[in-house]
Image (cartoon, rainbow, N blue to C red):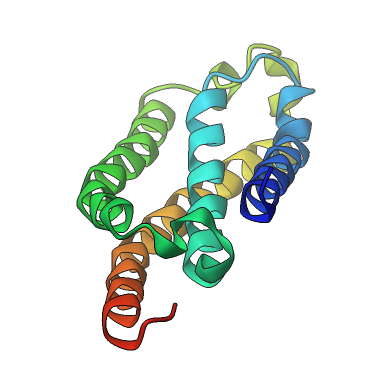
Length: 151
């Protein structure tokens, strides 16, 4: 396996571990209604941020057509991220906190409910911001490869 693929695999393992650590307090409280939405928000933020700052070390660095496809995919991803944040916020507005996690007794504490709200909102908004910056980074990378011959 090449060094680039091993690095990519390493970062996906790190992303999975960070996601698990962030969601562990919520998962241990009971069955979390927004688990997959939350996983999507966290993974999107971490992956896009990694590609923004560490692009030369990724497999994307030399594949121009894939960078172009990612630029076109970014608005769809922004829409999906905003939709998940909106779905969470709408659910909280229409329901009670105790229904977010099936083991509702754990959410009577303000700490866990505040953690869930803050964590979901942070990764949602941070993911949207990263997704807005991502196409700009891809354009810069395409320009550098075409005009300067380097990443």
